[in-house]
Image 1: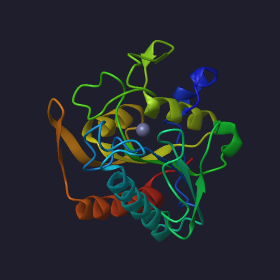
Image 2: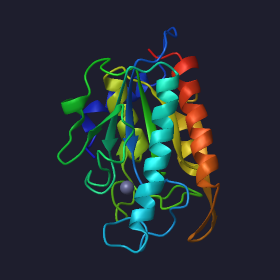
Image 3: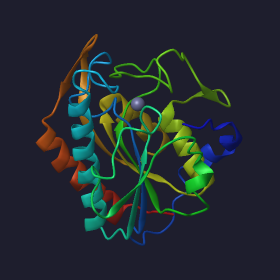
Image 4: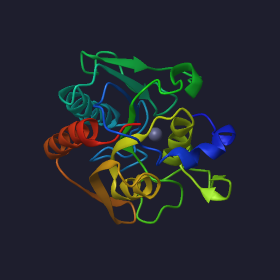
Length: 232
Ligand SMILES: [Zn+2]
């Protein structure tokens, strides 16, 4: 995803929320490393790997649960940005019939985001930043990056997207991913709804809830995020 250097000041806008008026347009950022049951970078993350198709199916299940929740909360538009592996992981055949899909690269934020162009951002399948304590498959853009900062504050992909969204006055209102990713968004946006679908158990191992339970919790959190959160 794009670097956020020019959006530094916007971190300060993250908490700038106003009166609730109901969700209308939701932008969903997806990734794969934070999907429940995804644990192994050698088997589950890239095309051609043994369990890649399973990962795609699990991601689509979590994603569409979030879309259902958003629609139940009254969303009129849901746009999905495929954020994993060069934006080539999802198919239009995977996504909810009422959602739209952004794929391919480059996909700079200003192609799709504009000032108040959406009412809220969801993250689905999100992982924590490089070096995050307790993170499952934690990294920032690539597994070779040690640390990225914005004005001295360490950020991962969550903080970068949140900063860009904040620049456009769009709050992050919901995240599903591993426990460390949930903790990371709540540091930036304490009001965000979060669903922890797994947590690190030991080096290289994780404890996940079932896919059925993940979908149920994500749908409910997405609906709450759409209904209850102050959106601007
Ligand atoms: Zn990824």
